[in-house]
Picture 1 (cartoon, one colour):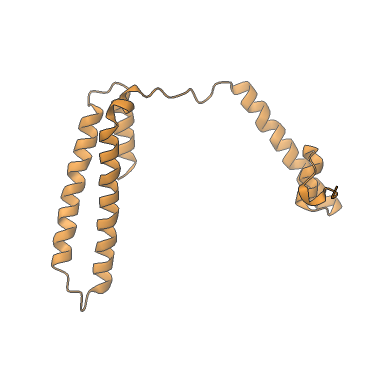
Picture 2 (cartoon, rainbow, N blue to C red):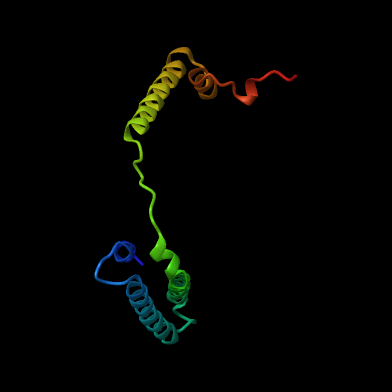
Length: 140
């Protein structure tokens, strides 16, 4: 299964012309066709002189069967999928940007402490975050 299945499923859940059921059932049909083809190839493979090919085909069968099981789970949970409302990912871009900037500054300070003063990364990180690593705490 590739990215196209996930994109099709996503778009079907957001009001596309195709229903999520149709997307999942179509993919399941394709996987069963692929499984049938691979099983036919297995039947035509001689284990005496084509063992590597047979093992490869068995790997393909296992992967297809796992994909089919996943699709069956999705089909069983289709009602939940239809009710799914994603949480907005970028709820507060200003706060996220500030956090990223602070983290970058801390990393720069940590790298400078390690580079110029020869302290270990854990010590430098503790200094920059004002946290004492457990390895530096005194036994009380």
